[in-house]
Length: 175
Picture 1 (spheres, rainbow, N blue to C red):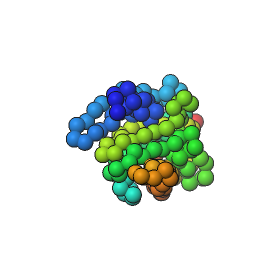
Picture 2 (cartoon, rainbow, N blue to C red):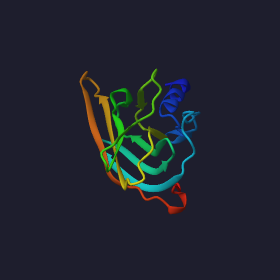
Picture 3 (cartoon, helix red, strand yellow):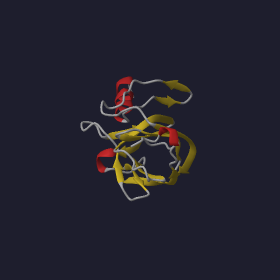
Picture 4 (cartoon, one colour):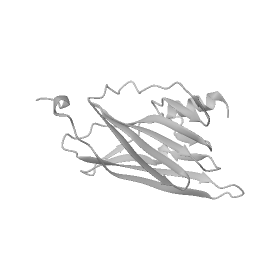
């Protein structure tokens, strides 16, 4: 795969800060959508899920006035390319009030692909501000691949539940 394809993947993940390819790390360009404002609250996490030879790690949640930004690392330990089809809403968050927040994606390239043996490190921007009374969110991600010597698609569902959201009172907006 060439550098242009990796740049497209980085852009697709919106504010992707890099794509690590073992053993060398490559920093790729990316940028936040113009409508995203600076985060008002940022919380650090060390949450991880492993399944189907894929590792997903959440390290940060940033709350902005018009979006929620999750910093994720997704490592593909499989022998196949894994894909997240954002057009089919295969990645989104729910809050504990059952509100859904979709990923902000460019309409011309909605497929995130992670080659075997690589890690995608990125900030995923979800549209909409969380309600002030929200205490937790849930991240759902469906990753798909086509097995070698087969044309059928297989998938696994990551469901990272009960990600606690606590807001620092000095960062809360005042009325």
